[in-house]
Length: 357
Image (cartoon, helix red, strand yellow):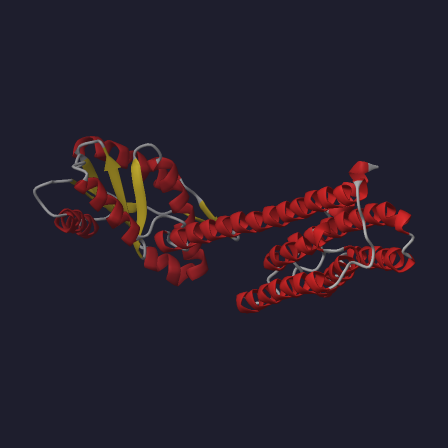
């Protein structure tokens, strides 16, 4: 039974434009105030004040109605009426039983509750908060110049003050909890968006490999950290223009994506790979000299040769030519890459499908 009731209270709204956390907070606060008013009314039965008891019963029914509204994509309206209902019962009960009851403190809860919702701008929320504070001062002035309609003394008076204080603090805690939850959720979303933006800025859209700029920053950082034991290779897909001209650019894109997967598998644990531009890719072998890098590059070259790239009913095979250089710390990064590029050009001029080192 409790599990079903919990699921009912915590059920999210179906409309994506509605504030689910706000709706859940309204439900919880409505239930708490209903319970509060029920206990308060029972405590005041001995006063035999029919109007006070009747109005509290009306407010109980009203908060029950507001609880129901949140399930029908009417959270915005429910929030407005919740504010008005709370102001109404606070003004009525404080006027009837006096300032010492502490019921006026419910106005502080409304300030926090309104902050949870995004229906109002911050400026409007600030104005509403000021109005609640002014209302509280007006109630104080009224109570100083008027005697309570109902005089409560002894144990009932103490009980109402203690009970009101506990309930108000409970409501403040719930609203504060929801506010902090929203802040955490916003922070997580911002972090996620930043990560996605960073990935978009650093990744080639088609192949999902690093892009040229990100790889250059990566190598420059390695060099600045006095890490200069590496080899750099630039590879070019042989006759790739012919693939595009013969089978179409979509087929060419599939070739690039398939080869990118092969590169990632072959470079795993050995270094990094990025798309350099067009059909050219750059490979950075870390912690090895040129000779050791060439052995690994031969394995990668053979993996490319063996690959059968399937596109629709076609089976395509390609080869690659590479220019390889062992990184020379005394030269700039651009000069090292330039040497690798020149060796790639020599390989293409001398027949392709080879590694020039």
